[in-house]
Image (cartoon, one colour):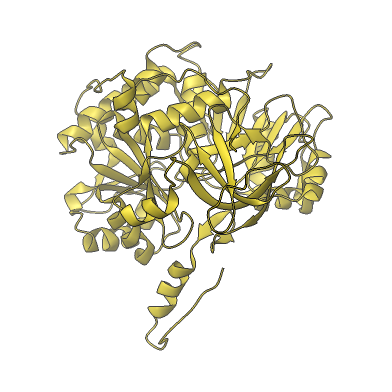
Length: 464
């Protein structure tokens, strides 16, 4: 048995991402889309974004970027982060983002795994970045400084803005399904079911499918204004920050990083309607006395993902909002290009469910031996197939063989069931060995590697 979404077939545009975003906008192209939360005078409209992306195409190609080369961005959030994301892809490259808190050890693994040839980082992170890049064979000539806060450029290095000084150049366009599916846009990191982080290969088709099936199926009856606070390197933020904002013309206020006071004040200051949070943020909102200083009544939609949120804190969060606002949970992962199950507006939920499968997604449930046990009210590992599923892990045939079955289903490692009465899905456990830290996945082998790097530790075992 296979669980099919209610809508099995939805047309997915077959274009490259830059053309899909910039060629036929349905809104005022001079209206600010990305707005800096701390300094609203810093903003980027679609017309400005198009020029920046075209300049980055010229600059990156002048720097030697060839088709398929990977560029790693190591930075906190900024309104120019999506410009680099789109510029790298438009230039024919592949984007990879890394956590700005990573150590040299972690950066080495990620740069090597993604096979990054170019590196862009903030000045404050240069020490670890430079050491890691050197170990990975990335020359200093291929490193730029992301000095978005006006920081001093260290001697011997160049600002990323140097890439904007080579004129403008159009991107290579394509409009056939095969090329759209086979052309890599990003290598986003995921620990998958087990083991060290792997580079998940997301195509242009994956990201366009994610937006189309999540954001264009049901139009909300109000003008959306988002607050982006989740890290822009993470799969939970990549689609909505880097593609949805410009595609849909949804004003998006960008926080450099999460701070509860700034988060709450920004919701009031900018009349935010939609936010996406992870459970630690949701808990902070309902537990902190700071929340009493601000009103969240203007919010219309709060979505929570990355890990399950108990229905009790979900209800407590709802009580802080207006009666017509919704607080719902979503489920997905890097390998599903972000969201795979959700509730569509205006449906709300008070049961702790993660919603229902988005269109075009097939789901089955398997037992511990891989047998199909798909049935309502039956617990097992959820497996997903559809246009949002990644092509696989980059240069990792072993992980690919373990993660996909013969019918093309991706084995997620999450234990779920589907309620026979409501057709709602619930995540109840994890088959994975992963540990969640502030919404991020940490694989036990990563911690073991850190421990074993100590001269006085002979052996170590971490159990998740």
